[in-house]
Length: 208
Ligand SMILES: Nc1ncnc2c1ncn2[C@@H]1O[C@H](COP(=O)(O)OP(=O)(O)O)[C@@H](O)[C@H]1O
Ligand SMILES: [Mg+2]
Image (tube, rainbow, N blue to C red):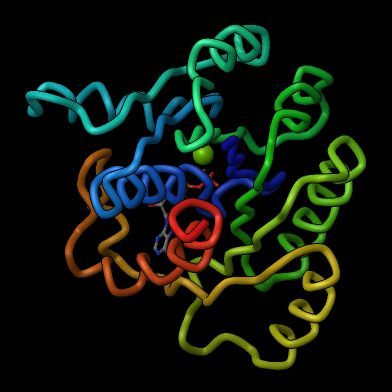
């Protein structure tokens, strides 16, 4: 299964959710996953290289890829249906090299926040994606939600996004997100994170 973690907006939590998803699928659910890191900063690959030194056996692979190398990396990694291939996308839309990536996706996890600019980027990203790949399913994840978030804006944004996909429970803004590594999710985050991934992956992966 090919899962893109994408949004045109930077800083919404794409790379963070990609790592958390891989940790969840491999460590909590003992299933198979890999990350294709297409972020220009390659932040996950850097984390992975550090974490690898401390492990005997890595629970999953992180493979850096560019738009040019994507087709071959995808071909090598996409071996079977119960292996989740998580693709961390850069925050941009204006490159035809993204077309094969969009076309390959079964599922898109799209983190977003409740502000006007992020909302517009989120809608634009989803509309373009669905034009390229009409069969794709989109799951929106409200991320970095503060306790004082405005209820009216949230309700309005949710109504609009629900026309394009499913919305999960919100993930709060918390400092312990800074302590996430490849292969390790801080225990304090498990109760906030696992229900969200359960919502996303349960019916797709382990309750056939
Ligand atoms: N729920 C959260 N609470 C607090 N900080 C978060 C949360 N989600 C992400 N972050 C932080 O926000 C920053 C941007 O996240 P990142 O995953 O790199 O975004 P993107 O890949 O979309 O650019 C990082 O410093 C990350 O640790
Ligand atoms: Mg990123």
